[in-house]
Image (cartoon, rainbow, N blue to C red; front, side, top):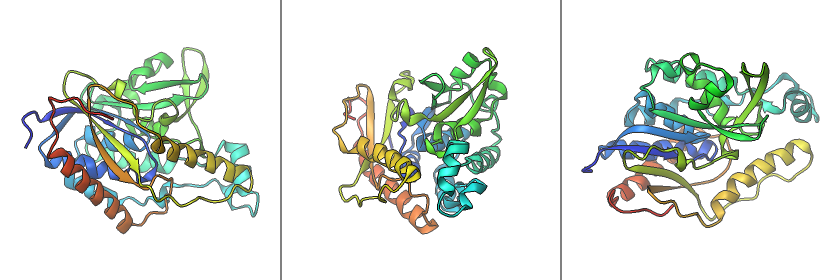
Length: 299
């Protein structure tokens, strides 16, 4: 058990294999840590939101196996058009999938803990990162909502998580009405701005960063055959590439590294999800046993 149990945490993005982050978070809860402030990008925002809502380790484990991960991909009708369906969806909707199912599922999970809008969370307990595609900047929600004339008190947490997780080309960008300018802005995956947003973590407590590490054996993905496969290849390469280069040194954050297969494979079965979760929990547990909150960690 750790001497200092209340910490702040940062969860990196990384596609659907980010369920390993949930396993790592469960390991921290197992070791007696509680999270005062959680920050997350993309898949990390999914985990961060559940922790802020009050889910415990075993509940996280149950969720990972209960969620229909392939079902989060809710295609547009045009996807059913032979040969050109994907291209039509990209042209008409700027993405292959709506993203509405992700928001619905996460909304139900949060509502089960009494959380619908940011008013239902303890103030300052959650920050999620999204990218304002219209203005080319990263935003931290709920804080940045006031810049658009939106009251965080009325804004759904699940909508913010969906914004943070809307991988470009895969999901349609999420429109946010900017009441200060009278226009809609498009929000997409926060990884474009900050995949590991450690700078947003409050420093009033020790900070633990949960990061993903790609395993060496990576199989090549599909060949580029047209606009749709090119878009997918760009996104997958972006996710894989960020794990393949040396990590920058992050001062003031103690890092737990979780090995994963770095891709966007939503076609993950409950058994596969369980295996990824359990491995993340096991690997993180070993690192937490030797975690020294008084020492500086290297990201």
